[in-house]
Image (cartoon, rainbow, N blue to C red; front, side, top):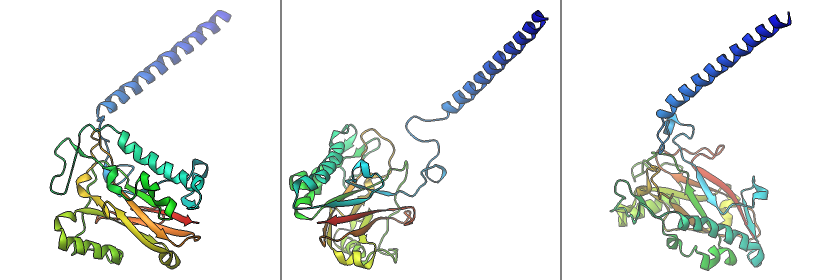
Length: 277
């Protein structure tokens, strides 16, 4: 009886060994076939067919300390060096990452000279003056610089606005800037424009000025992102002069015909608060 029981148990064990071995082999074969359909340098599903979608968002730097990971508040006292230096050092660390990246395939670009096939445009950190480390990025004089960048989406290309199709909700100041550019330098208007505004009437009133460096947006020659080695996303520095001692809600938006704005999920825009004591 014990012999019969052991024989049956052995057959059952052998069955499961063969079954799971076959199952493992099947999944390995399926995975191998699937892996062959993937390309190492680009996603299989892109733009509207991918998880990221085709509507880029904006990011800002410097960010609050990791201990306040949910916070978007930039708050400091301009008269206390040990207070504002956190923001200076975080900004310097962010820009250093641009300098530390491999320069392979990078070329100097302009509107007249976009990158050739297989090359990418470099970003000159010195072009953000006066938003520089030497100037403490303006934090010590209560004129902080906030850096904006557009999130990377593989193969996304901006559809640029021209004077005939500027949206009604675009800030008047930006419209005026585009018209002025079109009049003086029409070849430099192929830009994903950027605007930063107070979210509420009180916020608008408490922003005295903001200046954009090196320009008021991201040049189109940085797009599309093709995952070429050496690529770095363009950035814009916005230097704010604000009413001190007041919390100000700010929303920055990127403007192109194929960028939609949705405040609830921050599509095409970014929100942060700024308070300078």
